[in-house]
Amino acid sequence: MDRIQEAVSRKKESREAPAPRTDAGAASPRPASGSTSLPAFREITCDRSAIGRHRIIANEQDPALNAYRVLRTRTLQAMERNGWRTLAVVSATSGAGKTVTAINLAIAIGSKAGSRSTLIDLDFYRPSVARYLGIQDPPSSLDYFEGTRTLPEVSVKIDLANTLLVANERVTRRGAEHLTTAKADEMIRTAVEDYGSRAVIFDISPILGCDDAIAFLPKVDCALIVAASGHTRARDLTEARRLLKDVNVIGTVLNKAPDITAANAYY
Image 1: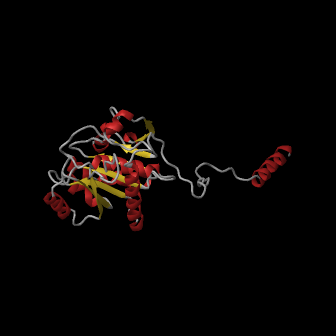
Image 2 (image 1 turned 180 degrees about the horizontal axis):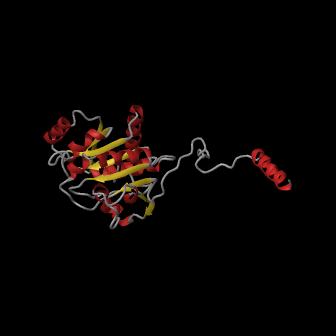
Image 3 (image 1 turned 60 degrees about the horizontal axis):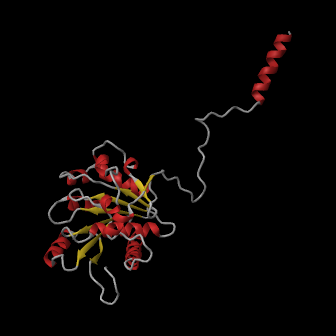
Protein backbone atom coordinates (compact mmCIF):
# COMPACT_ATOMS: atom_id res chain seq x y z
CA MET A 1 0.00 0.00 0.00
CA ASP A 2 2.80 2.41 0.89
CA ARG A 3 4.44 1.73 -2.46
CA ILE A 4 1.18 2.52 -4.30
CA GLN A 5 0.74 5.84 -2.45
CA GLU A 6 4.39 6.76 -3.14
CA ALA A 7 3.93 6.11 -6.89
CA VAL A 8 0.75 8.23 -6.97
CA SER A 9 2.59 11.13 -5.24
CA ARG A 10 5.48 11.02 -7.74
CA LYS A 11 3.02 11.07 -10.67
CA LYS A 12 1.22 14.09 -9.20
CA GLU A 13 4.50 15.99 -8.71
CA SER A 14 5.59 15.33 -12.31
CA ARG A 15 2.32 16.81 -13.61
CA GLU A 16 2.66 19.98 -11.51
CA ALA A 17 6.33 20.63 -12.35
CA PRO A 18 6.98 22.75 -15.52
CA ALA A 19 8.28 20.79 -18.47
CA PRO A 20 12.00 21.39 -19.06
CA ARG A 21 12.90 23.33 -22.28
CA THR A 22 15.29 21.75 -24.69
CA ASP A 23 17.72 23.69 -26.86
CA ALA A 24 15.73 22.72 -29.92
CA GLY A 25 12.53 24.18 -28.49
CA ALA A 26 14.06 27.30 -27.00
CA ALA A 27 13.48 30.59 -28.74
CA SER A 28 16.60 32.01 -30.43
CA PRO A 29 17.85 35.17 -28.75
CA ARG A 30 17.45 38.29 -30.89
CA PRO A 31 20.06 41.01 -31.08
CA ALA A 32 19.16 44.36 -29.64
CA SER A 33 17.54 46.80 -32.03
CA GLY A 34 20.11 48.50 -34.26
CA SER A 35 22.91 46.09 -33.37
CA THR A 36 24.84 44.16 -36.00
CA SER A 37 26.95 41.07 -35.84
CA LEU A 38 29.95 41.48 -38.13
CA PRO A 39 32.71 38.92 -38.72
CA ALA A 40 36.11 39.59 -37.17
CA PHE A 41 38.93 40.31 -39.61
CA ARG A 42 42.67 40.05 -39.25
CA GLU A 43 44.21 43.50 -39.00
CA ILE A 44 47.18 44.26 -41.20
CA THR A 45 49.71 47.11 -41.08
CA CYS A 46 50.42 49.16 -44.19
CA ASP A 47 53.95 50.34 -44.99
CA ARG A 48 53.99 54.13 -44.59
CA SER A 49 56.96 54.56 -46.92
CA ALA A 50 55.16 52.68 -49.71
CA ILE A 51 52.03 54.73 -49.11
CA GLY A 52 53.96 57.95 -49.61
CA ARG A 53 55.64 56.77 -52.81
CA HIS A 54 52.33 55.82 -54.36
CA ARG A 55 50.40 58.96 -53.34
CA ILE A 56 48.06 57.22 -50.91
CA ILE A 57 46.52 59.82 -48.61
CA ALA A 58 47.25 59.01 -44.96
CA ASN A 59 48.24 62.50 -43.79
CA GLU A 60 45.73 65.12 -42.69
CA GLN A 61 48.06 67.82 -44.08
CA ASP A 62 48.17 66.38 -47.59
CA PRO A 63 46.83 69.01 -50.05
CA ALA A 64 45.04 66.27 -52.02
CA LEU A 65 42.94 65.25 -49.01
CA ASN A 66 40.19 67.78 -49.62
CA ALA A 67 39.83 66.66 -53.22
CA TYR A 68 39.21 63.08 -52.10
CA ARG A 69 36.78 64.23 -49.43
CA VAL A 70 34.79 66.06 -52.10
CA LEU A 71 34.94 62.94 -54.29
CA ARG A 72 33.78 60.84 -51.32
CA THR A 73 30.82 63.09 -50.59
CA ARG A 74 29.67 63.35 -54.19
CA THR A 75 30.10 59.61 -54.74
CA LEU A 76 28.16 58.67 -51.61
CA GLN A 77 25.41 61.16 -52.42
CA ALA A 78 24.95 59.65 -55.88
CA MET A 79 25.01 56.08 -54.54
CA GLU A 80 22.67 56.69 -51.62
CA ARG A 81 20.23 58.65 -53.77
CA ASN A 82 19.83 55.54 -55.94
CA GLY A 83 20.20 52.90 -53.24
CA TRP A 84 23.51 51.69 -54.70
CA ARG A 85 26.22 49.93 -52.69
CA THR A 86 28.78 48.67 -55.25
CA LEU A 87 31.13 50.83 -57.33
CA ALA A 88 33.73 49.89 -59.93
CA VAL A 89 36.64 52.27 -60.50
CA VAL A 90 37.75 51.95 -64.12
CA SER A 91 39.85 53.67 -66.76
CA ALA A 92 40.08 53.48 -70.52
CA THR A 93 43.72 52.39 -70.54
CA SER A 94 46.48 51.83 -67.99
CA GLY A 95 48.38 54.65 -66.31
CA ALA A 96 45.41 56.89 -65.51
CA GLY A 97 45.66 56.40 -61.75
CA LYS A 98 42.52 54.34 -61.18
CA THR A 99 44.14 52.21 -58.45
CA VAL A 100 45.32 55.27 -56.52
CA THR A 101 41.83 56.75 -56.88
CA ALA A 102 40.15 53.51 -55.74
CA ILE A 103 42.40 53.21 -52.67
CA ASN A 104 42.08 56.85 -51.63
CA LEU A 105 38.32 56.85 -52.14
CA ALA A 106 37.95 53.69 -50.04
CA ILE A 107 40.11 55.21 -47.26
CA ALA A 108 38.14 58.48 -47.40
CA ILE A 109 34.85 56.61 -47.02
CA GLY A 110 36.26 54.41 -44.25
CA SER A 111 37.55 57.51 -42.43
CA LYS A 112 34.09 59.01 -42.18
CA ALA A 113 32.55 58.49 -38.74
CA GLY A 114 30.29 55.45 -38.61
CA SER A 115 31.22 54.40 -42.13
CA ARG A 116 32.99 51.30 -43.43
CA SER A 117 34.28 50.61 -46.94
CA THR A 118 35.47 47.44 -48.64
CA LEU A 119 38.08 47.55 -51.40
CA ILE A 120 38.51 44.52 -53.68
CA ASP A 121 41.36 44.20 -56.19
CA LEU A 122 40.00 42.58 -59.36
CA ASP A 123 42.68 43.88 -61.72
CA PHE A 124 44.07 40.50 -62.71
CA TYR A 125 46.46 41.91 -65.33
CA ARG A 126 48.28 44.43 -63.12
CA PRO A 127 47.20 43.91 -59.51
CA SER A 128 48.66 46.82 -57.55
CA VAL A 129 46.57 47.57 -54.46
CA ALA A 130 48.70 45.49 -52.07
CA ARG A 131 51.94 46.91 -53.47
CA TYR A 132 50.71 50.50 -53.20
CA LEU A 133 49.80 49.89 -49.56
CA GLY A 134 53.09 48.13 -48.83
CA ILE A 135 51.43 44.84 -47.85
CA GLN A 136 53.62 41.76 -48.31
CA ASP A 137 52.14 38.38 -49.31
CA PRO A 138 48.47 39.21 -48.69
CA PRO A 139 45.76 36.59 -49.12
CA SER A 140 44.53 36.72 -52.71
CA SER A 141 41.14 37.25 -54.28
CA LEU A 142 42.21 34.53 -56.74
CA ASP A 143 42.40 32.07 -53.84
CA TYR A 144 38.71 32.76 -53.33
CA PHE A 145 37.79 32.37 -56.99
CA GLU A 146 39.82 29.17 -57.25
CA GLY A 147 37.98 27.74 -54.25
CA THR A 148 40.94 27.29 -51.87
CA ARG A 149 39.72 29.96 -49.39
CA THR A 150 36.47 31.62 -48.42
CA LEU A 151 35.96 35.35 -48.89
CA PRO A 152 36.34 36.14 -45.14
CA GLU A 153 39.62 34.19 -45.19
CA VAL A 154 41.05 36.50 -47.88
CA SER A 155 39.67 39.69 -46.30
CA VAL A 156 41.75 41.85 -43.96
CA LYS A 157 41.29 45.18 -42.20
CA ILE A 158 43.94 47.78 -42.97
CA ASP A 159 45.18 50.13 -40.26
CA LEU A 160 44.52 53.36 -42.18
CA ALA A 161 40.74 53.57 -41.73
CA ASN A 162 37.67 51.42 -41.19
CA THR A 163 38.41 49.78 -44.52
CA LEU A 164 38.38 46.10 -45.41
CA LEU A 165 40.66 44.86 -48.17
CA VAL A 166 40.60 41.87 -50.50
CA ALA A 167 43.96 42.14 -52.22
CA ASN A 168 45.77 40.19 -54.92
CA GLU A 169 49.33 39.88 -56.20
CA ARG A 170 48.82 37.15 -58.79
CA VAL A 171 48.28 37.61 -62.52
CA THR A 172 45.79 35.53 -64.50
CA ARG A 173 44.38 35.66 -68.01
CA ARG A 174 41.20 33.95 -66.82
CA GLY A 175 39.82 37.04 -65.12
CA ALA A 176 36.67 37.31 -67.23
CA GLU A 177 35.91 33.65 -66.58
CA HIS A 178 36.18 34.15 -62.81
CA LEU A 179 34.18 37.37 -62.85
CA THR A 180 31.17 35.81 -64.56
CA THR A 181 30.82 32.84 -62.18
CA ALA A 182 28.44 32.39 -59.27
CA LYS A 183 31.39 33.07 -56.95
CA ALA A 184 31.49 36.65 -58.23
CA ASP A 185 27.83 37.04 -57.27
CA GLU A 186 28.52 35.50 -53.87
CA MET A 187 31.46 37.88 -53.37
CA ILE A 188 29.27 40.91 -54.01
CA ARG A 189 26.47 39.63 -51.78
CA THR A 190 28.84 38.85 -48.91
CA ALA A 191 30.65 42.18 -49.09
CA VAL A 192 27.37 44.11 -49.18
CA GLU A 193 25.25 42.13 -46.72
CA ASP A 194 27.73 40.59 -44.28
CA TYR A 195 30.59 43.10 -44.11
CA GLY A 196 28.58 46.14 -43.03
CA SER A 197 30.04 48.23 -45.85
CA ARG A 198 28.62 51.57 -46.81
CA ALA A 199 30.32 51.14 -50.18
CA VAL A 200 32.09 48.22 -51.85
CA ILE A 201 34.72 49.44 -54.31
CA PHE A 202 36.22 47.27 -57.05
CA ASP A 203 39.51 48.10 -58.77
CA ILE A 204 39.02 46.64 -62.26
CA SER A 205 41.35 46.19 -65.24
CA PRO A 206 41.20 48.97 -67.88
CA ILE A 207 38.22 48.76 -70.21
CA LEU A 208 40.21 48.72 -73.46
CA GLY A 209 42.59 45.83 -74.08
CA CYS A 210 40.83 43.04 -72.11
CA ASP A 211 37.29 41.92 -71.41
CA ASP A 212 37.47 41.65 -67.60
CA ALA A 213 35.72 44.97 -66.92
CA ILE A 214 33.08 44.41 -69.59
CA ALA A 215 32.33 40.98 -68.11
CA PHE A 216 32.03 42.21 -64.53
CA LEU A 217 30.45 45.67 -64.79
CA PRO A 218 26.86 44.40 -65.36
CA LYS A 219 27.03 42.99 -61.80
CA VAL A 220 27.82 46.31 -60.05
CA ASP A 221 25.53 49.23 -59.35
CA CYS A 222 27.67 51.97 -60.85
CA ALA A 223 31.10 52.95 -62.16
CA LEU A 224 33.53 55.83 -61.78
CA ILE A 225 35.85 56.59 -64.71
CA VAL A 226 39.38 57.87 -64.11
CA ALA A 227 41.19 59.83 -66.83
CA ALA A 228 44.67 61.33 -66.59
CA SER A 229 45.52 64.82 -67.76
CA GLY A 230 48.07 64.67 -70.57
CA HIS A 231 47.85 60.87 -70.71
CA THR A 232 44.36 59.61 -71.52
CA ARG A 233 43.54 60.10 -75.19
CA ALA A 234 40.15 61.56 -76.07
CA ARG A 235 39.36 58.79 -78.54
CA ASP A 236 40.11 56.12 -75.90
CA LEU A 237 37.84 57.81 -73.39
CA THR A 238 35.10 58.11 -76.02
CA GLU A 239 35.39 54.40 -76.84
CA ALA A 240 35.30 53.50 -73.14
CA ARG A 241 32.13 55.53 -72.66
CA ARG A 242 30.58 53.75 -75.64
CA LEU A 243 31.32 50.36 -74.05
CA LEU A 244 29.81 51.63 -70.79
CA LYS A 245 26.54 52.81 -72.37
CA ASP A 246 24.50 50.35 -70.28
CA VAL A 247 26.41 51.04 -67.03
CA ASN A 248 25.44 53.68 -64.44
CA VAL A 249 28.45 56.01 -64.74
CA ILE A 250 28.32 58.46 -61.84
CA GLY A 251 31.16 60.64 -63.09
CA THR A 252 34.69 61.03 -64.41
CA VAL A 253 37.71 61.94 -62.31
CA LEU A 254 40.40 64.04 -63.99
CA ASN A 255 43.58 62.78 -62.35
CA LYS A 256 47.14 64.16 -62.36
CA ALA A 257 45.96 67.65 -63.24
CA PRO A 258 48.23 70.24 -61.53
CA ASP A 259 46.33 73.06 -59.86
CA ILE A 260 48.15 76.28 -60.72
CA THR A 261 46.27 78.16 -57.99
CA ALA A 262 47.61 76.07 -55.11
CA ALA A 263 51.24 75.35 -54.33
CA ASN A 264 52.23 71.68 -54.24
CA ALA A 265 48.77 70.55 -55.37
CA TYR A 266 48.93 67.35 -57.38
CA TYR A 267 45.28 66.53 -58.09
